[in-house]
Image (cartoon, rainbow, N blue to C red; front, top):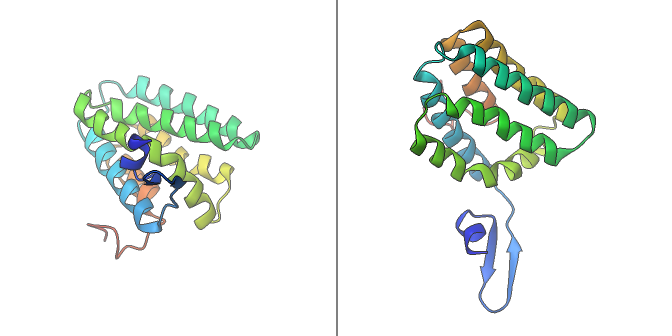
Length: 166
């Protein structure tokens, strides 16, 4: 319970009760921005040496996401989304980068649910939002991959709220 509280997922009133907190748009933005920064740092280290393995891992995760969307299984969609992005964070081989990224995982399910509702997008739309990332990796186009990641994580937020937005 303390771990969930530290992650901002529940509020504990000592000796009384605990309640699940509702994620604010600002919280969702912060989480997405942090994930974007970490994944961007990971792929900047280079995708060339392992591009084929990376591309294959992304395609497998994308297939799982597509199946989850067809089955209307939001939990499976969130799990395959994590799998997809974990492939990207593993590119760097940096353990602490992945540890920081992993600290945000428990919140990403809540972000995904909130953003589907807020942006009024379907689970199938979510799968399509990942396809550009996978295509950029398959083509070995690092600048496009970085732009796709930025759009993926930050496009749904007002540019005035996103640090460094153009």
